[in-house]
Amino acid sequence: MSITVQDVEHVANLARLELSAEEKEQFTGQLNAILKYAEKLGELDTEGVEPTSHVLPVTNVMREDAVKESLSNETALQNAPDDEDGQFKVPAVLE
Image (tube, rainbow, N blue to C red; front, side):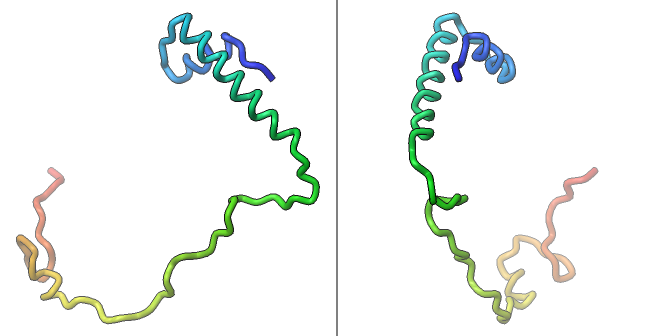
């Protein structure tokens, strides 16, 4: 597979980018170099290699859910700049 200047122009158009002729040539060469490098993966022997979704084993790092005492209403509102009827009072954002 090879990238052409027309491919670069198409992607630039989709991204709403204006590229000079030199930039188009530069990006064409760079993208072709990337594709050439990626083709090396096809040379690897992957026989017997199990597909994975991550290179490292990922485990759940979340803690167990545990019921514990929460703050009282008075404690929660202790540092509130303004409260009313046991709730935080904030400026209105709707007209």
